[in-house]
Image (spheres, rainbow, N blue to C red):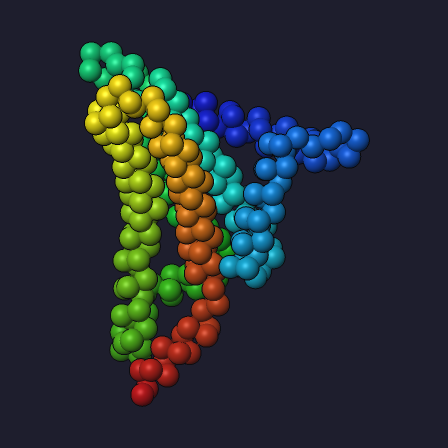
Length: 235
């Protein structure tokens, strides 16, 4: 299902790109929706990362993650996904974003790209100075570097576990509502599904936002931060 989600997103965006370039054809709902989302997300990216060159590298990846996670979340709501079809007690169609391995993979990809951009912006030595500083010349900076190093691992966990936890909670909510309402579940479940569709968009946006914010922190100017820490050390 993860591959299916990838193919859906790729096909959809390829279709939108062709439609957007052709002014002779009327743009449909899904084309306008994709363009509206892209413009809003790219504007957010530019606000967080003022450097246009870096923003043009981060934005396509982060926006693609938004669409990909959103599509996977909606695939999760299909009737045959989850416990509806099982083989020897194992789900035949497991929800992609309800699988911790996939959310970790997406988080790892995001962190790796962020580190690559940090190396490009600051160089190897400059980027390493974010984490490792002389404890004798700049003790406060040394402590800040340790915190920054720990925060890199916490960002990886935050990106993956937050998405996994929210999707799993949505699955459990649907199962509980179905079990509690019994025969009345067909009347109540549509409202739950509408709510989950809204939550899916929110989760995709939060993942996008965190990726962009972490990227902005990674490529932020180091000279100003080092000057502040040195002033605090002297004080």
